[in-house]
Amino acid sequence: RSTVFIQTDRTKVETAIRSELARFCDGCELKVNRMDWPAIEWRDVVSWRVKPLATRPRGSFAVGLEVSNQNGRSKTIMVSGVLSMMQSVPVLTRSIGPGEKISEQDLQMVMRDVTYATDSGARLEDIAHSVVSRGLATGDVLWKGLLRRELVLKFGDPVRVQVAGESWA
Image (cartoon, rainbow, N blue to C red; front, top):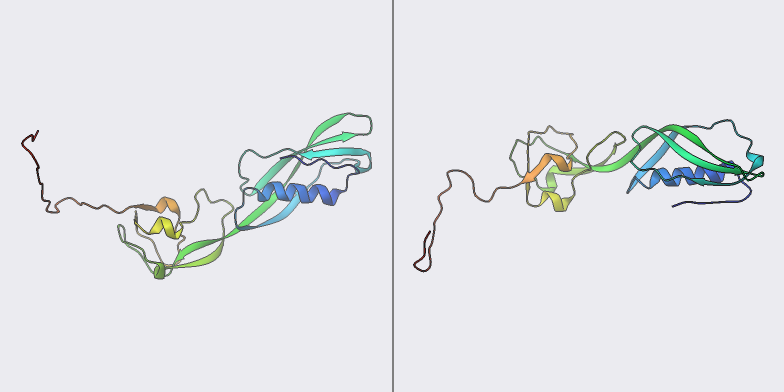
């Protein structure tokens, strides 16, 4: 995804960089706290394009910006900065023990800083047939990685085996 404009305006470049950063932020609020620009003569720039990022930025970022001047020479400059991402995630309203099932009443959606998060918040579909893998306190975020499938059959449960036909191996 590249955008090329003629007659460069620094605000247009900044908007394109923000949209590239927002690509990794589904349903969250992106706030760029600081953006550091290299020394460049913007009136000499004829065209530019933002190079796509390969991974989600966590805190600090560096975005490549390929600029071409009036002489036809192009070079890549790096625009760096610091950002924060706020997202609505499920937070526990009560303490939950390991292996305990969670209901919708145990959760509330709260805006939290997910800038450095390595996991995503659990969805209601994920919670339906799951239990927590470890104990969690009130106010903890419920991440997907903290859930595991609920066991249908547990050790020590009585079972009934039924065989149909004569071939039991």
